[in-house]
Length: 309
Image (cartoon, rainbow, N blue to C red; front, side, top):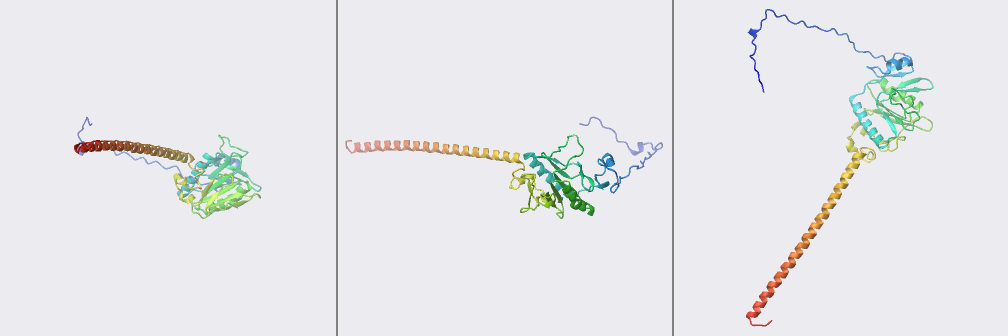
């Protein structure tokens, strides 16, 4: 409710004689867009101290050279988000590894060089002899699985993921390496063989199965369509680990529904049996009454005709 009203001020009521326009104070722009230092040579100590946690850019370190991590496309973000979800679902049911989704770097001390890489996703098995501390800012061991979501915005990014990192990860004994390309051109899955070299994980009817994550499997096509998790529980490929608690709840609900339906049918059968019994009794009573009336009528008729009975 409006409690007070005011007279509108008219233009003629304003005294313009003493009016001084306010000076607009334009701030001089002093900030500049930061420039990437990719290609700069720095020693390892400087990388860890200055560039590992750079605010503006994500840098990896390749034997002294700073390499900038690529910017993903939005589609690639969707693909990575979906893949992260099914990995998390798997690990809820099979807590045999830790999933790292941040820029958590690890050092690869290779025969001819040293690099520091930040995989998009990485997994550390609980059987790995080197487990991270919760306060660590990097992983001091070697990841068991590395996953890179490739960007084709620059040719060097493609070469880095498909050639350079593949060599580095295999030599460092990363057990499995997945390259997921939202454009489908360079998607590939590798595992170490008995000789310590990467061989491709061949899809079985479009399905990839991990050897070090027992039971973890997924359809390659689903990496690009990103179906809802609730849809996956109908699929034999995923139903063993996706939304298992939800499936159990659904099964319990279905069992309860069936039990209630069985109870309802039993009660309905019992009701019908009671109705049938009641009708049978009513019918017997009616038959008895009918017979009684017929006997009375017969006696009356015989009496009228003088026939003894």
